[in-house]
Amino acid sequence: MSDVTTQTQPITLTEGALKQLQRIRDEQNIPQDHGLRVGVKGGGCSGFSYILGFDVAKDNDAEYDIGGMKVLMQKSHTIYLLGMEIDWLEGLNNRGFSFNNPNAEDTCGCGTSFSA
Image (cartoon, rainbow, N blue to C red; front, side, top):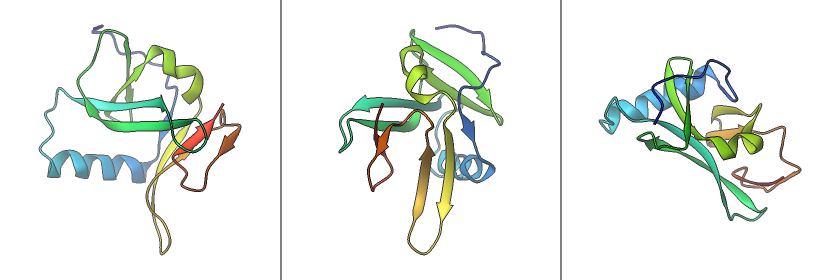
């Protein structure tokens, strides 16, 4: 694990997403040494699905400070996530995190699965 926080932000967290993530952190009493893990995994209806949750840093992680939130990302996932925006939607039909990924060639209706 590296103690160095990389300055270049590969993703963006909107103000709404940051507020919701902080609310989740507070409500679930997530320890301060945990960062927000953002990543991808195989599966989902389009080939990949997103990982979003609090976790401790691992050896192959890059660490970023995005809007005051410590964000952890496996270095190998950056190619799939570079330029992505995570937002929080709260509307009549949608409520939850949305992933706006410019690297996704195809997405599914649920908005949490994509192909690259």
